[in-house]
Image (cartoon, rainbow, N blue to C red; front, side, top):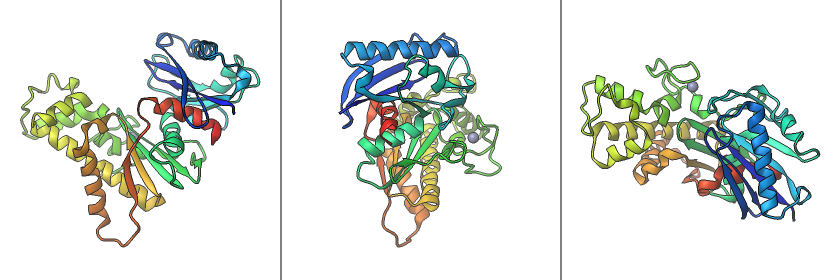
Length: 319
Ligand SMILES: [Zn+2]
C-alpha cells in the first residue's frame, strides 16, 4: 500500500514526514533553513526536505500517494493558492503554492490546506475523532482555529474559510480588538496572542499581580507564564484562565447549536493548562445547555500530539 507524505510549514520550523495509511510514522525530517527565504525559496527548501526524506527512507516518488501540506494562513483549497499568511518573515499573497510545488514534483498529487483543517482531519482519521461521523476540532493556541469534518469530508465553504470559530464575535461591543480588525472575536478573549492585553485590563481594573507583572513588563505574559501564574495562585492569571475557558465553552455551545456534531475535540498550547481548563470548558458548555434532553455531545482532548500537523497534512490524501 502506498505511503502518504505530510508537510507542516511553520514560521520557524518546517517538517516533513512519511506515514503508512494506518497513520504509523515511517520517517521524519525537520529544518529551519526556510526562515529567511523568499516565498519561492521556501518552496525550494520544502522540495529539498521532501527529497531528503524520501532518500533517507529509500522511498521513491512512485511509492507515495502524494504530498499534503498544512500551514497557518488563508487558503483557496481547490486552486492550491495561499491568499495570505502572517506567520512568516515574508508574506505569501495570492501565491500559487501547489503550482510552484508541482514544478519540483511533476505528476505528483499535491494538496494544501490550513493547519486547523488538516489537524481536524488527522484527529478524525487517526486520533480522538476516530469512530465518530462528524467532529469539530478546535485549537486554542496563539490564536483559536477550528476545522469541521462532516461524514469524512472537511467543510471548507465557498472560499475555504469555513470553521473560523476564532473570529466568531462572542462579545458585541467588546473592548478587545482582534487581528482581523473586529472587536469581540472569541480568540481576542481567550488565546495566547491576547494574554498581555487581557492581563493589562485586569491591572487597570484595580486587580494586583502576585507574580511581579506590571504595565511595563506584561508583554512577556504568554501561555507558560499563565500556567505558572495559575499554579502560584495569582488571582489575575486564574481569572484569565477561567474567562478563556468560559469563552471556549461558549464557542463549543455555539458549535453544538450550529452543527450538532458527535464530538468536539480540543487541542493547542493552552490545553497544557490541564484538567482545570478543560473541566471549566465542559462546565460552561453544560451550564449553557441547561437541561435540554439531548444525547450528550462528546467533548474531548486531542490525541495526536506533536505530529498532529504532519499526520493531518498527510491525511489530506485520503480524504
Ligand atoms: Zn477576529
